[in-house]
Length: 219
Ligand code: DHB
Ligand code: MG
Image (cartoon, rainbow, N blue to C red; front, side, top):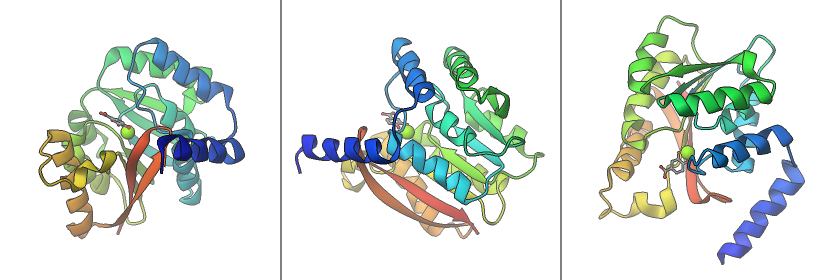
């Protein structure tokens, strides 16, 4: 199908089911104004994360990769008042913008931003209560490291979502050896073979183009 056809469908679905949301739209505006890449999840995808957190009855959510906190806001809104999102961001400038966006959206008190490289921050979370949902959306080269920590910091029943697992079909092109693509493939292989997970993945076609998400259960 032509790009304008599936974009129209995405817009239609978003209009019918997601609607307009000033806080989320302002967060994206500020992210764009700061010249950050427009790689936040699409509205229909943000709402999926929100619904998965509610379906799981999540109280504690871990997000790896904050950016402008668009998905963080969606996740934080899914939690009860005593719920918590811990989100990891490597860049101080981006973390500061995320903090502003979270506070403006009224969910700041429910979100803790951990500044640092996720591979270094994750081990520091090991003593805490297990996370009920983990959203992995950072440097794709490290997906297997993040999945390993998702299993360790979760519990049986924890929901794990990995963003960007299709990348316009590049994952199925064996000749594509881009490190990010290789990282995505390694993560999918782990989800299919590591006994700690039961998983599937779906292709997505939305405002962000052709991509996909993996959804896993820690068993
Ligand atoms: C890229 C990264 C993302 O997390 C995303 O959602 C889209 C694109 C990227 O690095 O290109
Ligand atoms: Mg992403």
